[in-house]
Image (cartoon, rainbow over all chains, first blue to last red; front, side, top):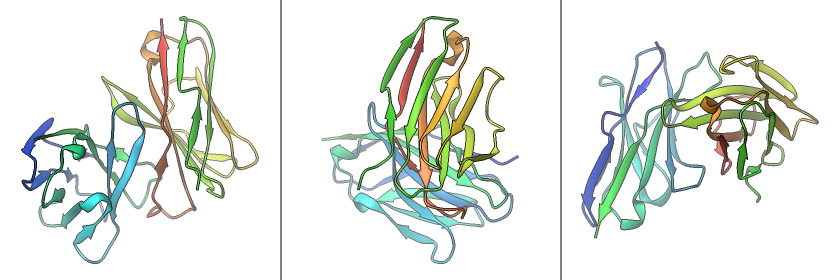
Amino acid sequence: AQSVAQPEDQVNVAEGNPLTVKCTYSVSGNPYLFWYVQYPNRGLQFLLKYITGDNLVKGSYGFEAEFNKSQTSFHLKKPSALVSDSALYFCAVRYFNTDKLIFGTGTRLQVFP
Amino acid sequence: GAGVSQSPSNKVTEKGKDVELRCDPISGHTALYWYRQSLGQGLEFLIYFQGNSAPDKSGLPSDRFSAERTGGSVSTLTIQRTQQEDSAVYLCASSSGTHRTDTQYFGPGTRLTVL
């Protein structure tokens, strides 16, 4: 089955520390992978995507993600967290034979001052 | 430029009533999507439009749900005889073309509450 998993409901990190939000996907062809962020009472904002090529993808607001095919993962990272990064983060996958995005359950990131 | 817009931002209705939710995609975007975000089900796909056609309606949960798109632009999602389980945030997204690598850009959503 085509799916994506975010194993952590919440990630807590101190401001200035590096952060990682985890995402893994089911193996089914070559997926296209996306990260979105959602602030309270707002829609989803696009952060970055992996299509092909370099496994390290850089996106908005200093975020980056590393595609690892052997581990079927696409973890979101940032070298130095900001309090303003606190939000709900969604990983999504789109497979070659479908038009829809399949979303993970979301991870709430809390950055403490 | 302007992003995806949705109206109304909030809708409260009584069980059994019909509701219409509207989405204005980014100008020039040919692909349009509806998703639903609820506490129990997370983010789930409802329907996909390419132009005015809907090649994928697989996510519509029942025949009470329908959607249309006119002029390759505005889309309306209609829920007939609303039920309490329809309460959710309905999100619309658009993308520029037909490639599956295209980024979907989301609107702010319509929060539907069925009493």
